[in-house]
Amino acid sequence: MRISFKTELKLNNYQRTQLARHAGVARHAWNWGLDLCKKILDYNRENPTEKLRFPSAIDLHKFLVKWVKVENPWYYEVSKTSPQYALRYLASAFSDFFRKKTANGRRVGFPRFKRKGQHDSFTLEGTIKVEHRWLQLPKIGVVKTYERLPQGLTPKTAIISRTADRWFVSFSYEVEPNTTAKLVGVCGVDLGIKTLATLSTGATFPNPQPYRQSQSRLARLQKAASRKVKGSNNRQKANLKVAKQHAKTANIRKDTLNKLTTHLAKNHSQVVIEDLNVSGMLSNHCLAKSIADLGMYEFRRQLTYKCELYGSELITVGRFFPSSKTCSCCGHIQDMLLKERVFNCQQCNITIDRDLNAARNLEHQALSCRTQTGGNLPFDAPLIVA
Image (cartoon, rainbow, N blue to C red; front, side):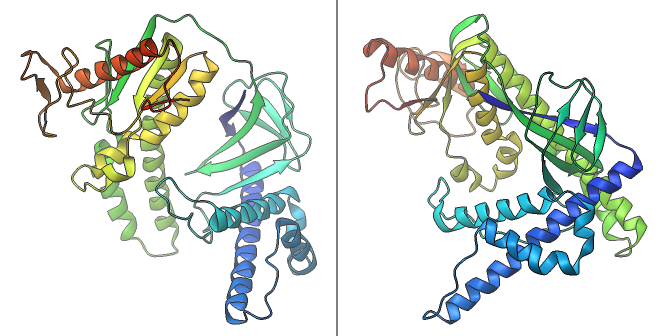
């Protein structure tokens, strides 16, 4: 399977300037291509009888070389692959806009113009040499890293991105799945707000709530930044502090999810989760902030590839299965309010934590379907094997 590796770069001032130039050229190429495509779409809308052909990535690059590079010689100071890949990503974004739909049936949004200092990134292609603690990039040269790099790799492309004032490099490579010894057979996982995850084994993982914990400091930094004069160095420094706080919040969330998903994939043969309707849950404005702070999509994304990497099986139960309303002991289904955190069964009088009850129901749902079908899922079973 193919996985990606991302690490921070250890740069000097000259190298930071070089990376910023590459990111600026990629941003300029994207904005120029997007402006040209919008003009073509507007012309075709106003003149339906004589429409112009929508340009592809190759057409955009030809126009860039013919019209833009002649007027902007600083394009030749950076690698030629930086604007090339920016136009490729723009063509891919338009392709998704015209044809692709999201999970809720809506079309993908129209590409937007990029702004300096926000999501700066570019892609390099060519001879990339990876060594112990440094790598050689085209046009930039040797760049050091803070941690050890995977050895024996010759990646064709490398993506350089900036978060706050830190630069990162990422590349993908092939790796063989490593099946680990499993301690538990089937494990149901119920995600929650107060407790991040409750396992059917009884183990719980606390929710650090990184955004809520940093809200007061973030508000103070944003208030200080808004009082600075626009365009001044002090405003730039204040905005950098805000970006650092956002990056710290995101890193806490990523670290928590990485540790949780690695524990589940390494130590459990089968992991059972729910196919949650996150978009519908976010419509509840009382819980939207807490739900968004969980990172449910990132949890499922990481768990999907890690189960494949460590030889586990990921099973997804349908979203309409009443895991919280069903008794894990006798199977009785009863109504429960969201504020009720303890499940009191009206039939067998068992008292159990609501999240633990849901996790055990997920485990029982997978085991029952496996037993009834002899190891194969029926066509109408509310389970999806990733």
